[in-house]
Every structure is written in structure tokens, then in C-alpha cells.
Image (tube, rainbow, N blue to C red; front, side):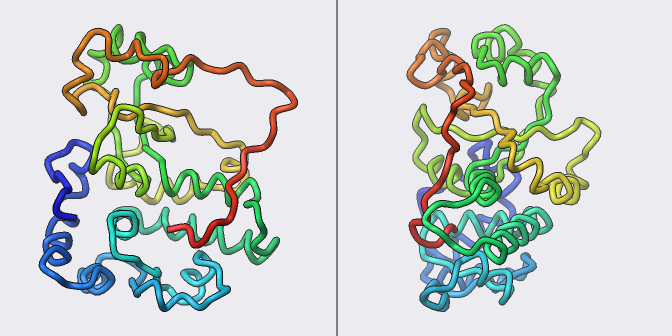
Amino acid sequence: MADIDWNAPWLADWRAVGEPIAQRVVAGVLQAQALSDAGLAPVGFVPQADLPEGQAYEDFIYARGQVPTREGLHDFFNALCWMHFPLAKKRLNQLQAAEIARAGVGQVRGPVRDAATVFDENALLIQAPDVVWEALTSHRWQDAMVAWRAQWAHVRLWTFGHAALEKLVQPYKSITVHLWRVPNAVDAAGLDAWLAQDLTTEKLATKPFSPLPVLGVPGWWAPNEAPDFYEDVGVFRPRRLRIKAEKPYAIQEIGPAA
């Protein structure tokens, strides 16, 4: 917790709420207590031990209005996301709980739970001019980040995925997020409500994500000022052609999804 750089650009929207809570945790307050005491989320935060054995994490949240919380960065950023995007987080939980009620908890998540988890853990919300968006989704990295670099003055980004934020505490070049496009007509004040409406089972099932090595965002990391930064094809990979017989992407159940 003490390693968080609250001056990092990806935490610009989170600092005012997150830094005082982190300071209490560093001082020795239990994380669930510090988060609950803030009173800024539509749910409470309880120790992980409160989750009954055999009950699904998402189902517990839906039924109790409480989030089982472990000590550490992963669940800390998850809680901050509940504070910043309460409607969208509630919507994701409703979708997860509905899928659990319909199909139960198996060894492999279904397509909706799969996509909801990818979003919850790794989404980066983006408003961007069409030329930038088209270059990003085509993996034309030199166009998106170099040729159109001046256009990033008109790009707006909101971090969402708590697993991505956990990784960014110790930044490395290959950290990759999943972009979710926000219409330019949506302003910051209306973002959470819009997102809660946009997160439908139908849309999630299509997995409308576009990957982005996030430290390539202009202005977010000093090394990307170097001309050859985006030439690393091990990180900035060309787009793969889809094949009809593509196997479905699945996430195995390996304990509670924070």
C-alpha cells in the first residue's frame, strides 16, 4: 500500500478518495474497516473470512450487500472502484449473480460471466477521436501513438479494472488493459449511469474489448517518448486474423473473483 504513487496519471481520478484510506491502512487499520468507514460505496466491506465456504463470491455480495475483502492491493482497488463507479459495479454484480442463479458455478465460466470478469478486472474506459480509435482497434500502434499523437489531447481515459491498477503499482511495459469505448456525448458526471446501462448481457457476450498495452498511452510513462518504444512486437503485437473455428475464451473457477 505504501508503494502506491498517487501522482501516477492512471490514478488521477482516484487519489482524493483513495489516498486517505490507504494512509489509514498503512497506519494499521484493517483494510475492510478503513474502506467501510469511508462510507462512499453502496456496499460494505467485510473480512474475507465472512464469506461462507461453498458460497460464490458474487452471490454473497448480491445477497448481503457486503464485499469480502482481503488485505492487499487487489481488493483495495476493487473497493475504490465500488466508490467511483457504484452503479456499474452493482450492474456487474447483478449480471454475475443472475448467471450463477441460472447456471450455477461450474469449472468454467459462461460467456457472460467470463466477459464481466474481464471487464471488472481489466477495463479502461476511453473517449477518442475516430482516427485514434480505429488505429488502436486495428493494432496500428505507430499510427495510434506516433502519427496521431497530437490527437491524444482529445482522448479521455478512466481507469476501471482493479487488477490492472494493482499491476501498475509496479509498472512494466507489457501491462495490457481492455478498452471499452465511451461515446463522446457522455460526460464525466454521467459516465457511471451510462456505463451501467451499457453493460448488457448481449454486449458483454460479444466481448467488445480491444487490448492496449497501457503504458503506451502518451504522457503516461516517460519511456514511451523514445521513438522505438512501439516497435517492440512482443508487446505491441499486430492484430491476429480471426478464424471461424476459434475456441471460446474461458476463465476457470479458481476461487473468489475480487
